[in-house]
Amino acid sequence: MSIQIVSESTENGAYRIGRSAIPVNRENDDNLFVPGPQFYLPAGDTLERISWAVSENLPVLLVGETGVGKTLAVRHLAHMTNNGFRRVNLNGMTTVDEFVGKLMINQQGTYWVNGILIEAMEAGDWLLIDEINACLPEIAFCLHSLLDDDRMIVLSEYDGRIVRPHPNFRLFASMNPHENRRYGGTKPLNEALLDRFPVTMQMEYLPFEVEVEVTMHQSGNTDQALVERMVRVANDVREAMKNEKIYSTFSTRRLTDWARMAAQFDPMEAAASTIFSKVNSFDAKVIEDIFDNHF
Image (cartoon, rainbow, N blue to C red):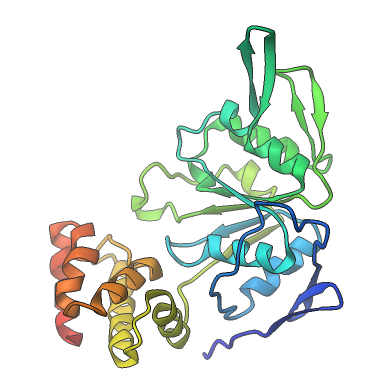
């Protein structure tokens, strides 16, 4: 099935894509967290559905392998609508103090310092919580309150103040699949937390033609025939991973690194530093066989 590039536009003060529209935040021009432009091709209806969730003020959970564009999609949408974008990685060691805030002390006494969640809520920025299925239980319970209908955080460790989000605040979360334990530290997302994300999307790798174009643009490698062979290698490696023949992924990010180096070096020589150096010896042998089918 062919997946088309969806047209997007900004007109009459609104960003439009497919059946979705979001007002452009014209009062946010001095916000340093508004991301700059980046190359992004909205293939399929993924960005359209994320945009709809944003317009309805609904939290969004993005699930997919590393490098499929989960972060890029939200960052692109923030750029197109002129909204601040912040990102926090919950690596299993991130504490509530870092996430929500904490009391500090100096010569004048104690004072409160907001964490990234409260900062984004009060500023009206968009917050992407990366690797949410690696978060500590106390952070998950904190998010329950924000994701419930009352949408608030109580600073019980400070003065009991209730923090409600700015109208422009939006919450996104992303996670890699926890199956096969390919991503260390991840686990199935708590059902109570999962149930609080009204929109949950499974993101896949880009279609062949789109990934070729993206890889060429991001890597600067203009040899289309070469990049097409590289994308075929990546797809075959992903298929081997899906069939549990190997446990290493082959992200578009990794593909771009390979193509960038292959613009200067022999493709196999470039792969030694960008592909094979990142996998174990067993997977390397399988991937080498796949390479031999294309190079």
